[in-house]
Image (cartoon, rainbow, N blue to C red; front, side):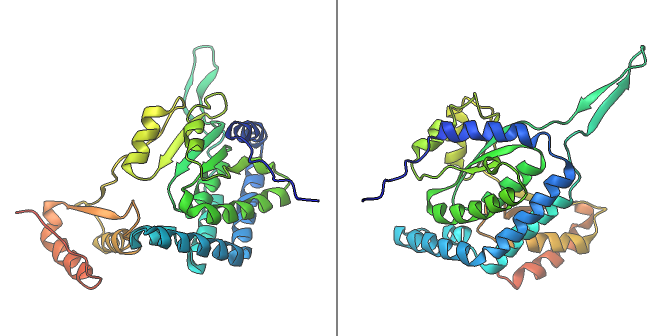
Length: 298
C-alpha cells in the first residue's frame, strides 16, 4: 500500500498552536524555564552529528546556488559553533527573569502602591535569513521571557534549522513543556513569510533579522507590530575614561571573530583625549589579521 504524504500544516494553524503554548509559558516558574534552557543546551550538544549532517546538505546546496563565501560562512555550523549555541542558552538561563519585574512604582495617597510589571508579550514571530544559530538564540531568549516563538528561517538553512528545532523540541518534551512553544515553519515557500505578516490574531510581535530588503518588506507589509533594524553600521566608541585594554579586546572581537556577520564592527569612534594613545594601539592590533583602518583627517 503506498504511503500517504503528510500535508504541511498551514502557518495559521502553527501560529494558533503557538498561542496555546504561550498561555502555558506565561505561568512557568523561573526554575522551570531555566531547567528547560539548560536541557536545550544539552540536547544541542547531544545532537551534534545530526545537526552537522543537516548543515552539510545546506552548505552543499548553497555552493551549488553560487552563494558567496561570506554567506556560506554565516550558514556554516561546526562543532565549536554548536557548542557556542549551547553555551549561549546556558547564559540565558543564568540571566535574571524579566517576568514579574516591577518598575516605576509609586505610592498613592490612599496607600496603594502602583507600578509597571513586566509580563510576556505572547507569541513572537521571527523572520530571519540563513543563520541557523538564530534558531536557537531566538528560541532561548523568547522562552526565558515567557513567550512562544514562531520561526521562519532562510530557505538555504532549511535542513539545519529543522535539526536544531528538533533538538529543542526534545528538551521541551523531556521537561513536559508544550513543544509548540518553539515552532519552526516547515517550508521554504516564501508565501509563508507573507502569511505570517497577516496573523495579527495570533502573533503579538514580528522581529525580522537580515538584510535591508527583508527588513523593509516586513515593515511595509506587516499587520503585526514590528521591531526592526536596517543597515547595521555597528560602532564602537572609546571614551576618555575607558579601559583601553578592554577596548582593544572589544575591537578585535567585534571585527575579527566573524567579519562576515551583519553585526560585525564597522566604525570606530575615539575620544580626542585618548586618540593619540589608543589609535596606534588599534592600528597595531588590526594589522596582524589584515584589517584596514581608515581614518579621517583628524
